[in-house]
Picture 1 (cartoon, rainbow, N blue to C red):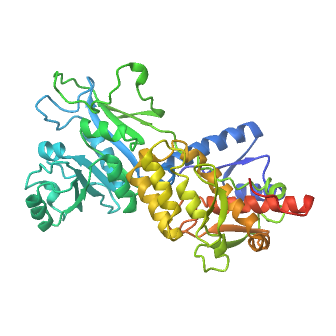
Picture 2 (picture 1 turned 90 degrees about the vertical axis):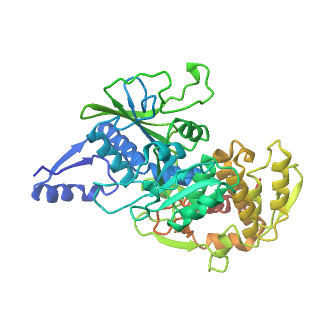
Picture 3 (picture 1 turned 60 degrees about the vertical axis):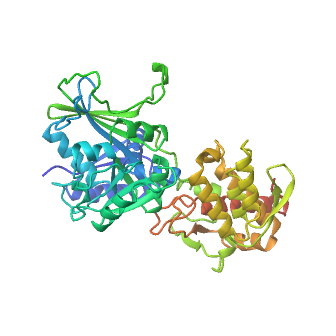
Length: 476
């Protein structure tokens, strides 16, 4: 049995208890190391990096509203995933295939293309992995040119979904439906819409085990976040032998996509390389540390925290919600002062403001005329999902500022709301949305609660302003 080890920093918020805690741990036979500030900082950074990697699926999902997507492939030393005949069993060794089963066991869904079904007839199960989790199998086929008999149509092994173009081979659709296979039709089948569909179904992680053509399409659509590449020490050759990623339209090596946080691991005779295509989103909480809380909001105790939740507009503090019927007057897309019915109207419309496209301008008008905040939210979210090219390019980096500007105007326009906000001094505000893990707190506190944080930030600003000027500043 190994020795348990605990590292304790010289600086600690409960330093008056540190000595007793160390004595107690050592008395239990636990090795305790007291480290200096430099080493403590290094260890914390390493721990933070590990936490980001472990929580990457949740962070990507919260930031981009698509599941965390991993592209997995195995290739020979000369970069081929199959022979020129299409034969691909087996490129990698048994140990590597075991790792693939582990990846499947950690995924909510596995995606392949029609070629993989026709050529390999895979099962795509997470066999040999303990725990009982069985991912959904998704086949993307635009033409629905699929065999009537295939291992994937056996839904006793796992549930299967076929994503296809609307109207494709209705006769085969009916036959597969009778086998228990779910068929989902899209107006235009593409990786981003399929990922939005998976997001709406609640999937957190998706594993892509597709061929080069579909892999290139998914990378181009920016829905692939991480790559697992298994390199086998063998050469197959073949001018027409397939490669892991198809045409991306890149003509120079300077256009190549550099992987981030790359790691290497030898798996028996194979080599596993993994890396991220996109940085892990920085969604670090803006809630101050124990030492900083008193300087930001003296009323909040870091040790005795009272939580006030809000969500529905009829709740006690429902007026804090963006759907509350409190109009705000702020400039519209033309710079003219416009009275927005709710904060939600303003926020959803500004996803498309300043985009030089007539269709984007029409969406803004549609949201402005929405008869309820629910309708405004539905229009904004649907158009963002279906027409991502019409969303302003800086939206992810500016949406928090847009929201803060709107709620600041809301509270300065309606003084009784300011009084209500000030009455919560000393409490942590949480938007209790069970679905929105960015603005809300989630079902079990797993959300980032940015709306609650902005309200606490505004409360602190108002408290400071009231103490110095006696009135609340107008929003700008």
